[in-house]
Image (cartoon, rainbow over all chains, first blue to last red):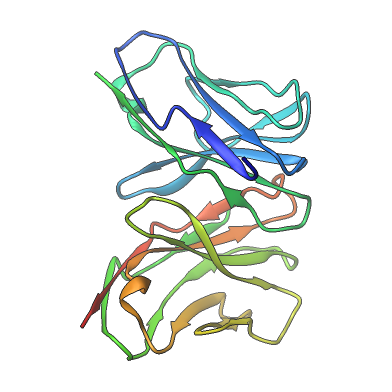
Length: 111
Length: 115
């Protein structure tokens, strides 16, 4: 499928477990982003990547790890999930200087 | 970090009428982009319109237009001839070239469209 996809779309996990959210884009965009959306906060940037093997922190990076070994993939890992990480997670991509396009989101619940 | 403020948590408009959503931002940069995104109940983030700060002309996309006041740091979205399908959450966003092109979002305005 063309575009940007996220998996899983829904995930329920328990406190302390490791969780990985996947993001895949078919446009070969250089830039990729992870945001979380919480009520009352809009979307906040977790991490972003300017190219393969280049990543940087955003506004709320604590508790998250990212990697980008291939241009098209940008997985987000919660190493030890906490209840405060219950949220909707969006992946996005763009080419330098152009608009961002978003994936459909992943709703994560941490019990 | 740049602050984006949407002062209207909720707005309501009747079908076929016009509504304006407000957005202000705080920045010391001169080169940046501003965006409006729509998020319907499906949760998908959809780009509505974008404005380059160096352009004086206000952007327009069909029924959607913006009023960009750079000196006042204001970026409002006008929706003309409102339709039921316009009901959604609308987010204003700022993009700086100095932060990896990441977006800084406001908290959103929920738009209700009544028949």
